[in-house]
Amino acid sequence: MKTARQKTARPKAPAKAAKPAGKPAAKPGRASTYSFDRVAPFLDLIGEAKSTREAAQAIGVSKSTIFAWLDRHKEFADLYARAKEAAAETLVDEMLAIVDDSGEDWVEGKNGPVFNPEAVARSRLRFEGRKWLAGKLKPKRYGERVDLNHGVQPENPLADLLKRVQGNAMPIKHETFEPGEA
Image (tube, rainbow, N blue to C red; front, side):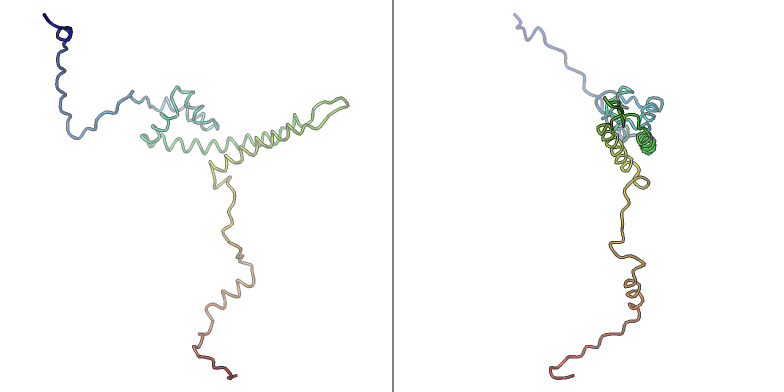
């Protein structure tokens, strides 16, 4: 009489075929669904200053998939960088709109218009956030200017004098001074 183990014995799996030389092993997981038609709407959203997470969700992929595509596809990485630069321009346009909008600065009170400091503070916060981000996305154009002079200014008369004298200085004689000599 056969035992339960003997009855359900499975046939052995065939041996794996040798992989051809020169071909890398396939990575596990789903195949990449990257195509220009798929990423074009993503890049448009990035150019509109949407977050990477939000733009990735709009095309039905995860943020990690976007970063994997950036690593694998150079043309996509270049287009992504250009879209980020466009996002800086979008942010500047939004900043101008925030500055120009004074619609909620004054609200109707019991005795007439009343200044609304909360709306002004919120507008300032929205402006400063966009300003900071635009400076990070396009630092040469919108970033903080860095002074590399370190306190020495070209119009400083002492600096000009030092420059002129440097080439004309006489060598120092190495004589020893004896006390009592004058």
